[in-house]
Image (cartoon, rainbow, N blue to C red; front, top):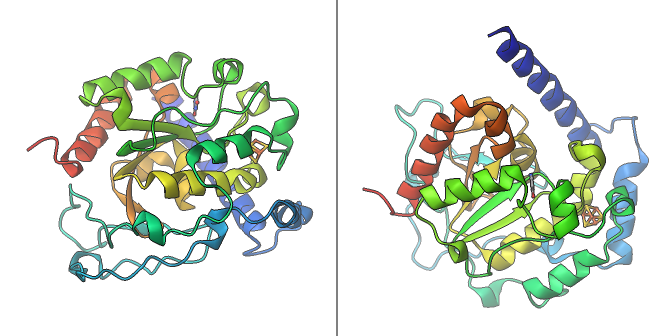
Length: 300
Ligand code: URA
Ligand code: SF4
């Protein structure tokens, strides 16, 4: 019990630190800690042409005018890096199990992808990326597993030692548990796409730092633009803050759908590595995955 409290406190301190640093990186409050970080990231992308995700047009208005009533309380997507919007109102009696899309996905033709013509091209660009210091110690980049037609996307934190060695995400112990979770959901290999917030291994398996997350975020956004999944499962606090800019702590955020870029439902849940240390939390993760299955129409 004391361990739990200590762990939660540690999580809160970590999340608070990530939150403050995130604001520093995004320039929202201009932390003096590393004033050059944002400029370096911007300079890199200027030199290498902005990735498509940074030039994204706002979602096209729907021709069928989808009913927006359940989402009236959702804030308009703000400027990056915090496009998250809760799906449920504070005063709503129950959170919805289903997570409706706010607007239909733009048709592939409507998505402007000036730099990369395909996921394969994007993967090639990542392979030689040096946008952040993580490139220095990587064996190789770890792009993704799965096909571009996958409907369900899992996003983890970053490659570990095994992943760095093999060039595939989630192939270590946490990956084996993730595979079991996916099998338990009744999903086939081709139905899921698995990637990470950062594509290079952070040394000693530390968490990626906010400037590294910021540097890599264009690739993830481009991946998700190509993929346009029906639902995203964010594995752990780093994935949630990297995708949504939310830093409240995974214990509080898990179990409730949020929207990525105001459009794609994201289910935050615990990272499988956390489950390996805390098997009791599998119950919560299973509840979260069942909500995902309900959203996909896989269970009644
Ligand atoms: N943990 C992650 O977050 N990603 C991986 O690819 C492997 C372990
Ligand atoms: Fe580039 Fe991402 Fe690797 Fe950093 S982590 S070097 S941004 S691919």
